[in-house]
Image (cartoon, rainbow, N blue to C red; front, side):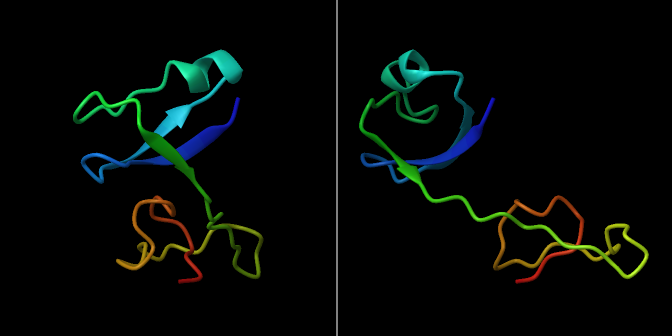
Length: 75
C-alpha cells in the first residue's frame, strides 16, 4: 500500500496518507483544516547505502524534510 505526499490548497499543510485505492483518494481530507482540496505531490525517495551495504548513520539534512528518518540522505 503506497504512502503518498499531499499538500492542502487551502491551508498549505503538507501531509502523508496511506492510499489503498481510488476510494481512499476520493475521501481524502486535510488533517489540518478538513478541506477536500488537496493535491498529490511528487515524492522523492531518499535511499542510499554505505560500502558495507548498511545505511550510513548520518542525520537527515534540513533540506530533505522528514523523508530520510535518520538514514543516509543524498541531499
